[in-house]
Image (tube, rainbow, N blue to C red; front, side, top):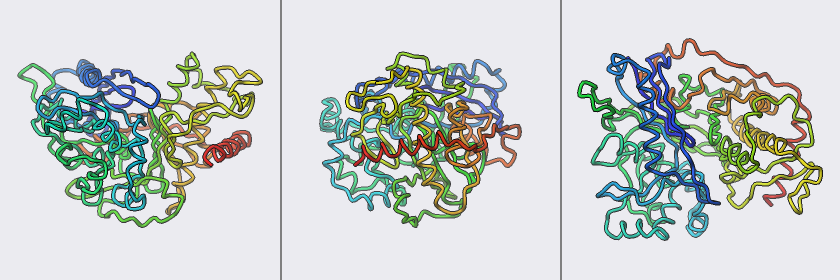
Length: 495
C-alpha cells in the first residue's frame, strides 16, 4: 500500500509518495515566491495552488500507473497561521494568502485587551501578531472587499489548510484540523471549539470560520487525474507542517527535542502520551515564554507539545542574502568562522519565542560595526555578514533549547530535520552550544513522513533503512563567548 503526502511550505510545495514503512518512492517539488513589503508578507493564492498541483503531477510522473492505483489515502500538511479571506458563495479570494510571518496588525492586537495567562490556558499561545486573529481584524477594517463580504454575510476566513482542502476536494463545506485552527488564536485547545470570548474580542463571527474536524478524519476525495480509470484518493489526514513533523521518525521520545528547520525553526518536545489529557501544570516562569501546541487529535487521543519558534531561519538566510546580493551556498562549507564577523540581531519575521517582539529591527552590531550608523568600521565582507546571520539562527535556537531542557525527564539528544539541517556548520554549532548530541536523519522530509506514519496506522517497522549523521558537542569557547555577547546585546535592545 502507498500513501500520498502533500506538504505546502513557506518556499515550496512538495508531494511525496511512500510505502507503509516510510520508504519514499517518488517526490515532486515546485518553488513558490513570497511577496515582502516591510511588515506585509503575502503569497498569491493562485500561484500557491498551482504549485501544489505541479508538485503532485511531478511526483506522479515518476510513478507507474499500477503504483498510483495502489495509493490508499492522502495527507495534507501546511504552514500554520497563514490564512486567506474568500467569498463564501463564489469561493474566490478576497485577499492574498497572508503569511504567518506578516506582522501588519500589531496595532489591532495592542488595542485588543486579553489576559495573557487566561489566553495561554485556553489557546496554548501568546498574544502574537503572527497568528491569524489580529490580521483578520485588520482585513475587516482595511480591506474593502473583505468588509463588503462581511456585510453581505459572504465572508470566510480560511486557514491555508482549509483553503487547500476546499480547492483539492471541491467540497461545498469548509473544514480544518485542530492544529491549524489553533493558530488563528481563536480556538480552545481544551474543548476543541472556537472560543466565543476571543471571537468577540477580535470582532470575528463564528460563521466566518470553517468547521473543525479531527486530524485523522474524512476531509473529502482528491481527484487528481482526468483519467476515469484513476480512482479518487481519500484525504484522511490534515495537520500543520510542524505538528506533523513531531511524528516523522515514529513515536516521539520525551527525552529528545525535535528541531525542524525550514523557513522558520520550530523546537518541540512531546508532553503527553496517547492516554493523557492536557493540563496546564507547568508554572515555570521561563517556560511560560513557550507555546503549548496541539499536534494531533483523533477519537483515541489528544497530543500536545511544548514548543518554541524562531521566525527567521531559512527565511533570514534568503532575505539577507538577497539584500547583500550574494549566493548563500558557501555557508554549507565554512572552515573557519573566527574572523572579524559582526553579531546579527535576527528579527526577520519578528522575534518569536521567548522574546515575542515585533518592534525590533534586524541589524549588524559588535565587531567591526559602528553602532551609531550601523556601518562597518573594519569593513566586514558580505560573506562575513551572512555567516553572522547563520550564527544568529544557532543562538536563537539555543535559547529555546535551554528552556525546553528544563522540564523532566532529562534530555538525551536532539533531532534536527528540515532543509536547514543539511548545513553541517549550523548543526555543529547547535551541538557545541547545547552540549547535547545532535542527530540529523538521512531523510529530512519530516512533515510528510509524520503524516504518513499516521495514515499507515503508526507501523512499528518504520524507516528501517534510516541513517543518522551525528554531531557530538566539542569545546568551542569562541562560539560560546560570542553567544554571551549576543545575549548581552539582545538584553540591551529589549529593555
